[in-house]
Length: 208
Image 1 (cartoon, one colour):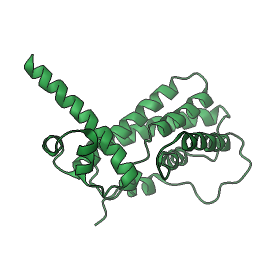
Image 2 (cartoon, helix red, strand yellow):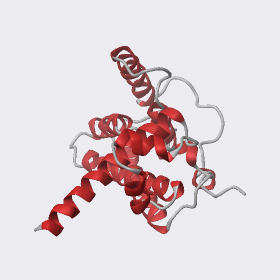
Image 3 (cartoon, rainbow, N blue to C red):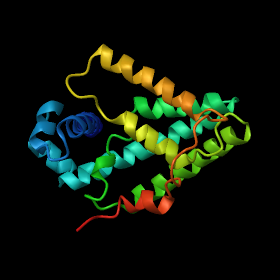
Image 4 (cartoon, one colour):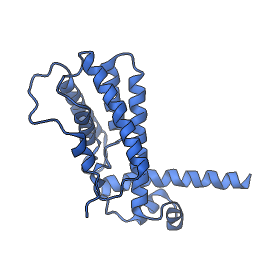
């Protein structure tokens, strides 16, 4: 019984650490000290280092969770009967989760096998979502899954200053405008070639 109690407490501490780490890293930058994370989570440094030996390990865990949530959002969207409703709901859900907020860490950490597997699963599901919406005539033909992923990434970034209701209202307003821009047939020709999977994945190759 006591063991289960300790395990439950460890799980709660881990959840607090992950939430605090996401908030600290995305608002203070990825150079923020881990002491700020422990302080915000309300746990000691010992608890943090017992669970995550390095900042890189913590960032890898956060990225994996973000990818898992994107995959879950895509699965839920595919269950929607209407292709456009599913796609728009997917974009809104990913933005609400701030799933792209960790993108600036690309190239600074080692990408684990679990991260690659989950990322490719999320990409495959998103591709199905995009294809379905395009074939239904709801999504403009020149928009790719990577375009949508990068759009989510842009809207995942925190606004400057302390969060407030106005920031959220403005973000939702701009997101509604962006979603309308994805609808078929599209009035403005998109400049340049669409982003390639090689370019997208190449951002995550660790830089020397």
